[in-house]
Length: 588
Ligand SMILES: Cc1cc2nc3c(=O)[nH]c(=O)nc-3n(C[C@H](O)[C@H](O)[C@H](O)COP(=O)(O)OP(=O)(O)OC[C@H]3O[C@@H](n4cnc5c(N)ncnc54)[C@H](O)[C@@H]3O)c2cc1C
Image (cartoon, rainbow, N blue to C red; front, side, top):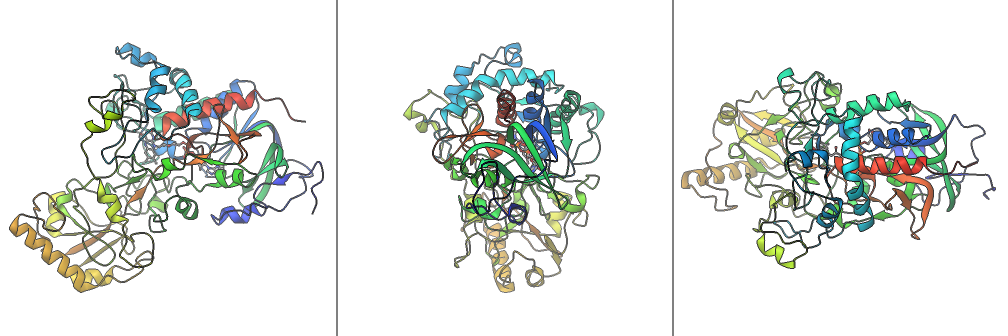
């Protein structure tokens, strides 16, 4: 089929089906005729209503554009809402000045491009950051902090610190905390207790004021409108002129006269996409932080790639730092991210199914893999990332900074992903094994709604029966009962001798001996996306020839080239993309 001059390409032709299935749309997409009529026409379409999408839509609106914000879920907010609300915006904010912290855009830029900074395991935080993107972030960072407050976000009134987030530079503290105030939280379905509302940090306190500001500014929000493809004037050239939407099975086309902003939140829940960067991350890593509130299904990346967009900064996705891969904080439920517990009042509790058992002391459990073998010291940690003073003493740009790092291998994550020696990638499920005495010590109630019985939590009177009971879709081989018995017998002997001869757990304290015995899901949790679309400092998406794709912008976790966790880059890049998209000439 030839493409007529006024034809447009539906990026990812057949994309409705392909993206819904989480698959990669065919890059040589079928061409489709332009819609005979657009369902909506607007200046700027923003895709995704999270930490980058709301700032993008508000900023575009206040820069004079008419704006539609489309959101796939029946609710707004994305991961931004369920986040911890720790927002590392610096560069000389009013809050930094109030507490006598000297910072500037230049210092922030220098910090985030300092190739010499490494983590305790040797991985560099900033070496592969794209300098144009970081320059734009550094210059806008103090502006966006003040702007967020103007839009109604209340930050906890205290000096910026180093709590939460990471990869925020080594020179000065920059972490601010959005106060939860009296917003109903998505985690509990209730507001936080009145006495902590102004002092507790939460993403609800960031996103809900922005949602109100967007409504006030006149942004039109369309829920359950999933973008499934991009329209471009011709397959590999011309402007992006609109998007295709799936609205509960109905196809809708929205024309964007000035630009489309992809703020879709990244790719961590798309198994095939994430395995391009780390083949180990197979299906069993199903407890993604932020799910089941919203997905990071790579739909923004795939739609843009299918019209020629490039990805950027791939190392940041596989670098072993930050919270990209985490150790669960609560066990026995699918979603175990340490800072996010779904409680029964949450609007998504029917999907989360259980809150999990928070682990206070990893001495109380033994971790085993799919075949009942221990693999590492259970008290071992996860990857870290850089904050103020992490490298101490620190000399900017000095190769010798690495000498001031105390080496820590952080191998719990890598050991858990190591696999069982067969041809399959991925380590399979990791189970926390414990007994009735551990339940007593931790003060757990190992019953629903705390645990997800039948798939992510099992109980039995003997260890052998427990091993037999562990059956669920990711347990691809049965756990040999004898193996689990042998593992626990050997571990109990380490408690007697006081020495973990296998993995060096600091003085194993408790035997696993008193029935009933339990197996709780404790598999690593995937968190950030740090690879994404190639953008320039204005947030414009760049194609595989290094050329700007006119009319297409991206921000937040769907944009690449920046190895910082979360909210600061999302809000800042949203602001930048919104302003620039609104400044485009109207396409006719
Ligand atoms: C539990 C948790 C705690 C965190 N804590 C912190 C913290 O304290 N500090 C920090 O800096 N960062 C934190 N983060 C990270 C931070 O929340 C994210 O980096 C940030 O929200 C990313 O913003 P975003 O706009 O890219 O994506 P999101 O905020 O996730 O928004 C993306 C939105 O796009 C929607 N969407 C996706 N695809 C489509 C489509 N095809 N069509 C329409 N809509 C679509 C999604 O449903 C979602 O609503 C945390 C994350 C989690 C999950």
